[in-house]
Length: 119
Image 1 (tube, rainbow, N blue to C red):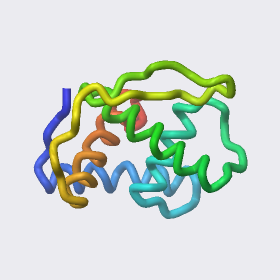
Image 2 (tube, helix red, strand yellow; image 1 turned 90 degrees about the horizontal axis):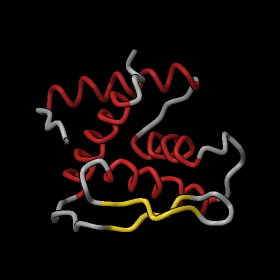
Image 3 (cartoon, rainbow, N blue to C red; image 1 turned 120 degrees about the vertical axis):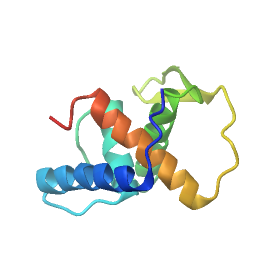
């Protein structure tokens, strides 16, 4: 279930997420960078050189995976190359870009908690 965080709580926990990632990879990441890393994790094929369209696909995989916890997407299977495919099962409410970012950050924090990445 989605844990609705207030703005201060979200900002604090988001900072923890990005600091951990920045320290681990010795790089500065933003929301898209975190989505890319989650996509790579969910693909399960390790780090390698990805083409531009594959990077976009990885961010889509991450978004679908994150929103699947809240009933918006469902995994339908993998293609012959092992890439997961998702289908939308519930339509997302209308949101502006700021609201979308807020929702994704909440989902990412939940994902990190689910995988004990904060430990």
